[in-house]
Length: 174
Image (cartoon, rainbow, N blue to C red; front, side, top):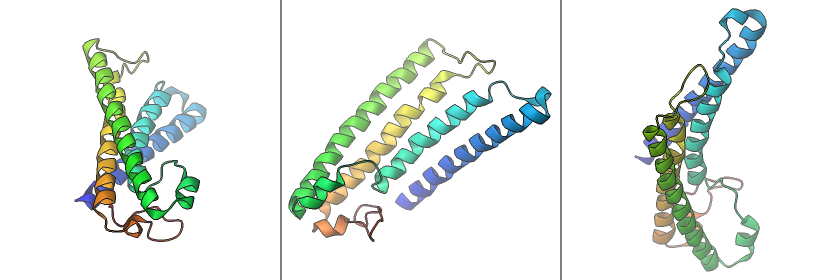
């Protein structure tokens, strides 16, 4: 099940990135070679696509233990303390990401209530753009919950260490 979730996130983020890249390439080429076919709101759409991709990829960073963290501190404390620090970090991250999702949905609700649209010719419904925030917060919250469960259920600290040097994928968690 987690493999399907991983592949879905990776595929969606990749497709969003490719779409943003294709739109950027078209915009640059059309400005110089086909000015009449230039899209006035391309930059706006590129931003929307990239924000959605970033919020989805944030979940993958949690899975792969790729977010910024104080590794120096974790490398100098005993294994039992490491485990406790990682559990505390996961709980704090769950609270933060859940708040991100909660307040993000409030922003989406407000945008729907006032029928907010972009100022460009596209008149894009802003609630779709804003929905990236709660979606990313929810995905990261779920990943941190899985991580916390792995930390609490693993018999030894080494069971949740990366598989190889420089690798971030934790075997006991994913």
